[in-house]
Image 1 (cartoon, rainbow, N blue to C red):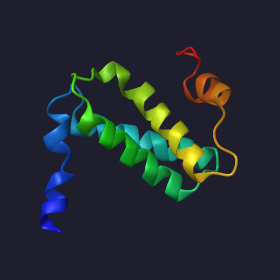
Image 2 (tube, one colour):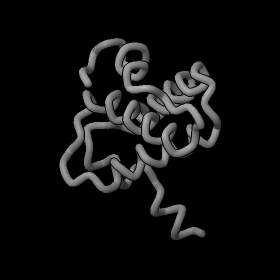
Image 3 (tube, rainbow, N blue to C red):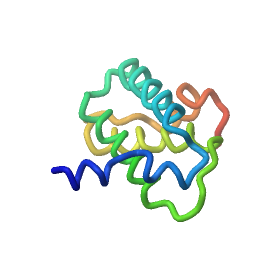
Image 4 (cartoon, rainbow, N blue to C red):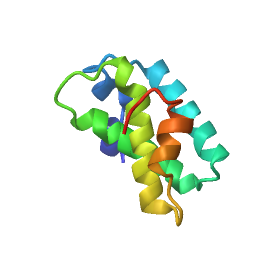
Length: 104
């Protein structure tokens, strides 16, 4: 269990990217708000965070902080497809969650 805990320490894999622990924490708070607003399950949230962290852990290139919002939206979209009967629609993600800042 101790080995597993050390493998999931965010400082080890966020150090390679331009995203700090506090910025990741704000992103996770925002994900909670979004998923609650759209009445998604708790499991969708947990899968979203897991996908986000695994992406940062496996990414070979340095991820800039400007890509955090897009990465979080993508994680929520994929998680909703795994867990929800009615997943988040792409137009909802682009227009409402992304505030129109991104294109399909």
